[in-house]
Length: 465
Image (tube, rainbow, N blue to C red):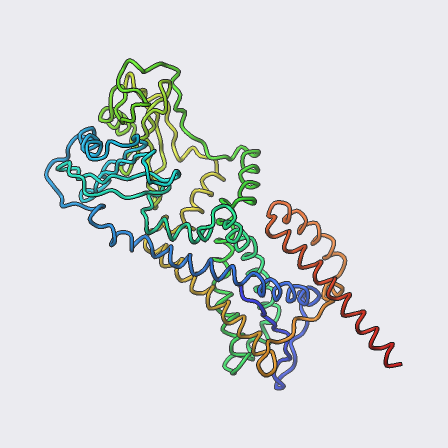
């Protein structure tokens, strides 16, 4: 539930009415409360950054359409030029680099994108997208593009800010830390909320800290499922946990498949070689696109030229919105015949779930509705963090924050819960290291501080005698 620090709901209930009876969560509650408190205090700043940047990213899709409307849209004409002619127009305007992919106009008012790699001044992981009017062959502009979703500079900048704060691989640790802990804090908040639901009913409508607690808990309960989903899907492409997830999927035979693009032939004598940087190999783009259409690949599609003399064209659908279009085919550049077909329907189950989860996380699966839901989740997370810190402040005296939750909570948990819990934590910590390592650090620091406090108290007692 709550991703904010101090959801300390152990205050005594109002004088009127009996205290709530202890439930099944009573032995576990103090430990969950302490974990929720400390995780919130130290992880909430990272979650706040992720929430703010995620909010911006969800809105970047619509902003992109407005900012780059000239490049992305054209007046609808009567007859489209052949795809090869459109690519030739792009190459005439931009002879630099090599054609790495072509996306024919997916809609009547959309431009065709010709992606060029190896262009000077463009980041190595990006391409230069040249936008061509499919009716006139006029080049309407060029922009740097990143990723399979076709992100343009505005969305790319926000995406990288959300993913790694523009700090590269080191910066990605922040987002993985946030994703690793979001579900833990959300789950802990749910336990705290429902374990005291009778008492919490009595504090609604009050003021001060109780009112903040009511808002914090109510919003957190409604948003918890969304937080767990964002956490799980965010981990799938994180640095360390993501690698473990990929390895597990591969071992289970659930890795994402790819179409076979190797033909085994030598096509050097059938058109421009792959090293020439052109998109026309052998039979050419027009026949390749026609072959893909014959296999049922509707727009939007992306055509990737052969990588070398023994490779085929790859045509793949790139629609990430529902219903997804992710079929792909390989086309022999010598004959124009389809040599391999891969249907999204034939993907392993976990590969499908991963694809859907990532697209839902990034806001493309259900379009504008998806993006608005993500913005609402991000706003909820921001409010929960603010309310959490506010509760900590309200728990203090004067101008200081309140004291932490008392130590020793784990001693109240029965062994039949502690022992399985330790095993689960160790396994999770192995597969999700940015959960396990900070959790171990919390434990070591907590034990050390407890020992220091114990020695001070013992010393004070001896001095008093």
